[in-house]
Length: 456
Image (cartoon, rainbow, N blue to C red; front, side, top):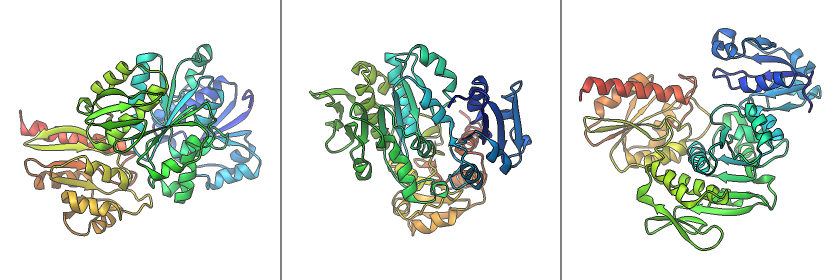
């Protein structure tokens, strides 16, 4: 669509300016832009301020149906469910609905590497981005991580050889399926139930995730987790490279060494012990990034150097401090039971687990046995706290608290030298925080304060 003089309604500016990049782009393209958000202006101050001076109309503190009927195009925030009555109003009026990521990929002249998964996608994206920067330091990273890449389209049209790496959420992929579109190189870290509160069912969530490979052609590549039976079954016409920590694959571990056999003979990348990331799941993330990097033509020595130096991403098994022999770990990104189960498997020490939060409609049955086996003290809070405690079924001593501050005070009381205090909530943060980052920052600040009190 030629956007000049088109009436475009941006649905959802967001507390952290998620829609700002789309608005700026639309204004540059000559569209007549209106922004609507359910939150009032007082809650969106930073995002609104970022648009100062632009010819934008605001409808804040609620949506107006007439705006959805009268628009030529709706650009919806990725997290707005398809079931939204306002989107249904637009569609019944024949108004097309798109998203910021769709605006970008429709206009991006460069081949895209897309990464998705129920967990591990941010770490894998960050790792792969660093590897690709060794080949081309102009590599762009965006999507569900970082800011909008719409501002970079002019650069890409001047040089379509710049690598573009996109972390893609299920919400973004759901809309990308409407185009239809899949990336030139797709990386699928794993699949487990998540975001059922927005997608409405496991099947809808699965269908959204499958868009990562569904529209690939024979010249494309899919880097797939060989230990995830579901992911291996997903249809797609691209060439496949399988990664597996254990078992057969094109990128794998053998005798303590990471190796790959993409394109022929088996070659060693580096030793497993060289990785600074901890946990089996992070080893799998590294294998996924290696597969995509090799397919993209990154030199093996550059891949190995990144693996030796990459320290991880905040809020993902982030070791904040060790105080009086107790290790405090921030895994606030764990917004699903599967993520928390993976975090528990990363440690062999006695554990104090802080869990619970906003309910996304996911069962905790499979998490319960892992808690019973690995956790000495389980501290639960939020709407899902009781469900997590009930799933644990013995083993751990259970402590019920009201909020994260109480949970951390409790953790400090019960933790003993040699223990790990792990914030890995298995739940979203929206009942007490704006997002998982704010929750993780609160944990980190509390630990740093405790560290200062404890002295050198």
